[in-house]
Each structure stands twice: as structure tokens, then as C-alpha cells.
Image 1 (cartoon, helix red, strand yellow):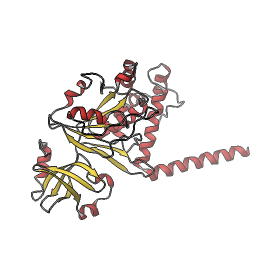
Image 2 (spheres, helix red, strand yellow):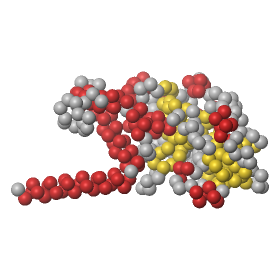
Image 3 (cartoon, helix red, strand yellow):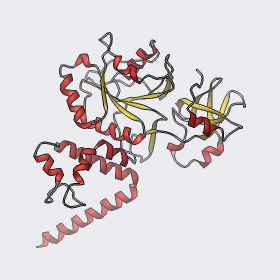
Image 4 (cartoon, rainbow, N blue to C red):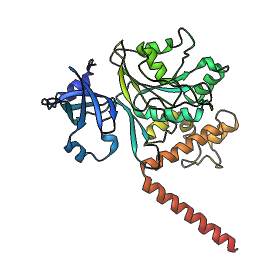
Length: 345
């Protein structure tokens, strides 16, 4: 596997480092990377200076990144620089820590995968769309396992209601041409990423595109949920020259500084908000609220508004955790003070 079809923008960036070689990260396992360059593949690690100077986890190399490395020092390359990203899919890292996790970098199209069984969840698609629009990549909703669903048309209609302007394609392992809708996206030099929960069929899909059972796959558990098979992110070269990034299943999709993505994913609500009588309308009980009017006449569901407000709160927390918690504490102090005063009366 070699680095081919280097985008012109990275030709220009790499020219600024004449003593180093441009490489692309294809695999990451903790602090060890696998990178490809024009002559082949090798293991790599970041330099001590890079590690010392880098302040946030998301600035370390990730799968899909183009990096400048010294490949002359033996069996391992040494990464000195990460070149600017043209797109980056980020989520809040799973768990309690408020840190960003780069899922994939420099992707052209991100496939938001969801199977048409018990994994189907409109609210999760809204989360994925928010992160995808914010990444700079083009989102495509990919619905898998259509052969297991008797309500495909109805579920596509549900997706269309929250994914305006986004391509929606379906796949089925049971049909001879079950993956034909993906073909138009497979272009030499383009990078695709597949994200979604465990068990939706990402690895099966990539195996089909490769024409080889390279990636391990697993069936469903008794509760119709998937088992984790992919345990790391990996960039894979397809026979036609396109590249795909396989990612581990994600049941948690926390927001991370996704204001632009929210605006794109919930454009309908933001357009309605601009029509409210008051600029600071909370869409609860204010007179002249265009959002509540849309809910009453059936143009907007209460569930979608609730999802939007929840994601806005999560996003505000990720942008300014300390400020968010201080504001929350102050809010509840005022509520307690109000309740105490009124209780005495």
C-alpha cells in the first residue's frame, strides 16, 4: 500500500518541509501509527518535541491525517507535523471526561450508517448529522439491512424529515445489487468514512467493496444490537483507488463544539426562530413564537424541538464546560432562593 493521488493542497503544504516526507496515517493503535508514503508503509511515532508542544488530544495525528515525517531513521518514521485538515469528524470522547476525540480526518464523504432493525433511531441520526455537517465532509445517510424491514418506505420518510438535502441510500446483503447505490461515491482519490453503531454492517459493507473478507464481522446479540468487531480506526485502499475509513461502533455520540453543524442539521428550526416576535424567545410560552406555531399546525414535532434543545445544551457544555456549570449553579441558586422566599409566605 502506497500513498497515491496526493491532493494538490497537500502538495503545496508538504513543499514547506523539504527535509521531511509527506505521509498519511492509515492506522492508529494507542501511541503507535502506521503511515503510508510514496514508497510504501511503515510504523511511526510522534517526536518528543511534537508531544511536548501539543496541548490537546485532538491535535495529535488521527487516521486520515496527512503528516510530515522523517522516514530515514530505521524501522520507524518520526512524525514532526500534522498538516492542516480539510475536514475532521469529532465527537466528545466516551465517558465523563470533557475531551474531543477525532474519529476521522480529511474525509470527502461521511456515511452515517443505521440498520433498519432495532438500531433505527431518528434522534441518533440528528446527532450524527450535526457532527457530520460540522466536520466539513458531505454527509450521506446509509440505511442497511433493508431485507430485515417491512417498512422501508416509511422509515426513509422519517429520515427525510430530519435530513433535508442529504442523500439517503439503502443497502442489503441479501440482494445481488444490494450495494449498487454506493458505487457513484467511489472515485479514485476520494476518502469515505463509515460511522454508526456496532452491528449495522459497516465491516460487511467494506468487505464487499474490497471483494474480500478482510474485516471481521459478527452477528447480532439476542436484543438485536450489534457486537463490537472493529476495535480501531483504519484507512483502507479500495481496488478503484478510493479510500475508506472503518470506525468502531459508536453508541455514544456526544457533541463537541458543533454550533455550525447544529445550524445546518436543524436549519428548519433556526429559520422558524428568526420569525419569532422576540429575539430571545425560548419557544416555551412567549406570544408570537413561530416555533410553537409550527408545532401546533403539524409542521414541526415536539420531539425534534426537544432534540434540538438538548443538543444545544450539550454543545454549550463542550464549548465552555466551566462557564456552563457556573451558569447552571447560579440558575439553581436563584430557583432555591425564590422557593425559599415563597415558602415563607
